[in-house]
Length: 438
Ligand code: GP9
Ligand code: MN
Picture 1 (cartoon, rainbow, N blue to C red):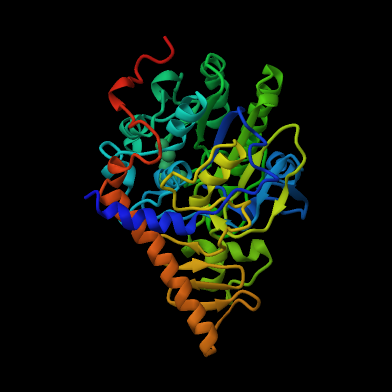
Picture 2 (tube, rainbow, N blue to C red):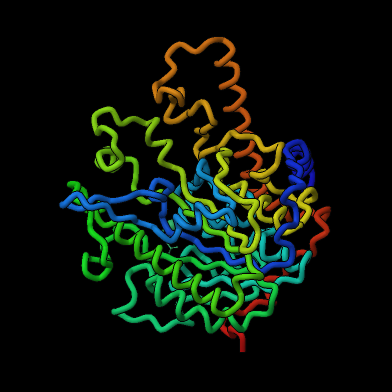
């Protein structure tokens, strides 16, 4: 009921993190180009894979160059926060600053019927942006077609807009290089400024698509074939993104755009991590749930060509924090929006990162699978001081309130009652993605 909104509003007000004036609006009016880096984990950044001759191969040289550029706001303590909804949960988090559901996918269950105040719609109503999502898989997957309408996307170019055949695709759709190549014809006809999202999917489990000579990248040699293929598909993604950047530069779009890149969730699951350990200079035998928690870091980079205030920021945060961060860089005031994350560049940012199941990570302590760990040793805290126990209880409470607030909003469809944002409700019936740009 509208009454349930009161509690939500006071939570949001209490947690609002004001923008940092050094960065507020530095990308105002620019196009936004978001690139979804499927299953890419932060450990891959700067990682070099050794082949059987001991020769090192940089897995993502292009993304590494972006990560280290001072035109990029890069975050190396940024965590995914998804559960069973995987990619779709990441999209929910990144574009709404709300969590997915504790069970299943919010896109599948509520995406077609709920009211949202999402990135495409906010930018349209505050900045006159056109919006488009690009993905070389069927629009039904994760109920995207229906959900995107409610998110306010003007256009959705799904696989029906692409030449997809046995040669250039796999079970999740078109491969990344042809995906970006074929996307350009649509992108260049979009009215500027635009907000766009490109879901590149080749680096998807089971990472079996590219053998040595196709990818030109060696396989790892652990006993786990999933791990072994992961580096080659990540390298292919890196090359595809580089080609897309080259296009952006050649077309002139680059200079008046901002390019956001994020990894949606882990690519290597916890059950496989002990096998991965040796490649990370760690021991399989001492690998623990502490290590599993730390592996949930994913890349988050906001590249703003022509400015040099960026760098590698060590703030702890997660996908829920991305939208307020982005909006503030674009000079959009978020104080009236129902968003549960906090601008990562704000002085007020809280560094308690919630996982969807109630576990959490902070700069000094990690709570994962019922254990509290000291980050400085990686060991469980067996006998916490009274003070630390109190602190840990506070963190747990903060995380559970953030998650339950999100669930109340989503399950109660509360945004349909919320008009104080100043946003007109999205009229999903005005979108028909079959017509494209005709
Ligand atoms: C398919 C792709 C896969 O369209 O988004 O999603 P995931 O399996 O990673 O959730
Ligand atoms: Mn995914």
